[in-house]
Length: 104
Image 1 (cartoon, rainbow, N blue to C red):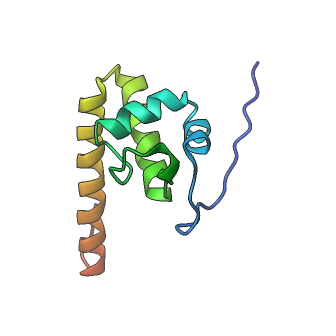
Image 2 (cartoon, helix red, strand yellow; image 1 turned 90 degrees about the vertical axis):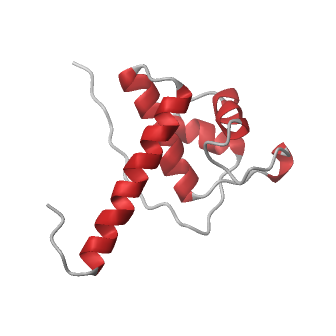
Image 3 (cartoon, helix red, strand yellow; image 1 turned 180 degrees about the vertical axis):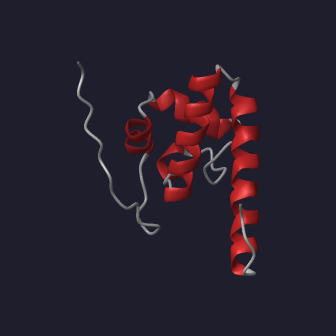
């Protein structure tokens, strides 16, 4: 039987990850990250690798896209679209909660 260690933590918004750190956190090769940045799926749109720094939002989005690609064998474009939809639903639920409405 294989044992898995679950690591938990808090990603700070003011912390910035490098390309290599983001790739490692997503369990992908840096080229995977570069391809999705060039496609406009996350990052700040800069094409200068030396300026790339990634936020916790980028990390969450990259992990979500990777999971969708892996779990559903989704093309990167479709995984990014699904990530957009999931993020929109989360924002709408947050607005409902802020208005004091039930989100069930």
